[in-house]
Length: 578
Image 1 (cartoon, one colour):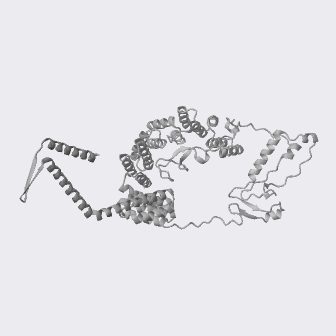
Image 2 (cartoon, helix red, strand yellow; image 1 turned 180 degrees about the horizontal axis):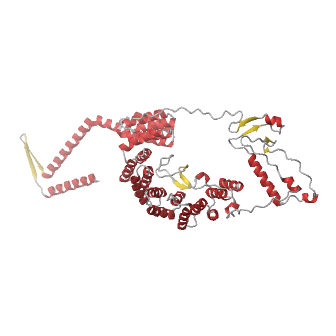
Image 3 (cartoon, one colour; image 1 turned 90 degrees about the vertical axis):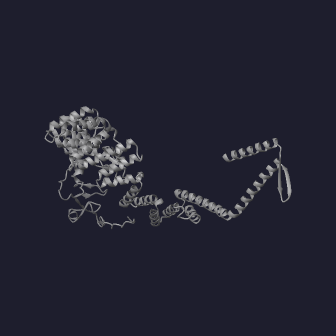
């Protein structure tokens, strides 16, 4: 556009000049070689302009002819480069799409049209093609070659990092990530792995410095940086609580200040303050976090704040905690545990009944089993509640990437993500279904008064089953044709005195007692894992055959080779660490 404007300005200026000369007539006389030449001023001006134009055109033609070989080479070189970049672009797209054939073809064309020194991306295309072919060793060598070039160093480190992760060699992956983080701190993947490495080695200050560098390079937001610093400070406080209580106190309080709703930070602060006898400040922190999100570890730490307190004092603290968050399962469970320890079983049953109404789960039934065992010692009822606990939905736990941990950890052992652990129900038990009968409020059992056993009539004798004597070492049981263990064959039942009564069937109360006794006999007859059973035939044999039966442990049956105790040899690393 500017060139066109300049051209128009020059033409306009020439037109004005010729118009000015035309308005002012004159002659131009030139004497040369004894001759005199006379022309008008306008013709002289046109002749001068024409001569200058001819000279310029002639010079341009001569210059073009002189530079034509170089211009031709430049044209073909530019065309070759354009074709090479087009092939390189097509090859990278094909490699990303998984088209190995097209990627390999385009890679060869790009390598023929472009030199690797001119375009280092050719190494990347060749490495990606080798990985698609399954030649991982060749791909790693290409990435190692890319490390030598400053332009492709980070790209080579990234490729080696991904290959090390694919092979499960975490040490090599961390090595390459550390090198990338030193070269370019702005790389989020490298800095995250570097933070994980420093956490593993206990270098909390180094990890916090890397988080600050992530903030300065705007890799993470301000809220995310607060969460990460809170996680790292909490982990630091828990690690130093025994060796350096002063530093642990500073880190825990700062973590709790950054994230007041973060349960591990409040736990760390409460533990440090209680150890330093700052009960009032620690209690304030724990009560504040309990109002936001009740947690069993918070409740346990709050109730056992003073080691010298009696069980009834702990029960009072548990009731205080329940008053802060009423109608919550964890509040009811805290009171139930404290009441059970104090021997106040009625209060414990009332608290656990409230927990069952709010949400039956595994811990509520386990607590019921503890109360039943401490109060009545009825093993039948204890087994009943334990069986319900097995079928009940699982309690929340610290989970991260499908991994369940008993304690909170700052980094996920699966993905290495910082602050990935959450307090929630594990995924594999989210679909647990409660029976409709169990979903309703459960009526807790009442301790029955001892009564005398009624005399057995003929109908009871027909339903009673003689219980075998249990053995501590070996449980001998014969196998019936269906494969179920049965006790010694009972005697033939006596004929009922009154046929009309026997036709009506046994009474419901007696039938329930007989069924319960049969279930107890079956549970006692079933061998445990550590016990052994005699191996007999499919039919019931004689006493001599039973005595000669071979005793085989249950964990290793005949024709079972057992567990191979040989451990596989450790494979050497495939990476060159430098």
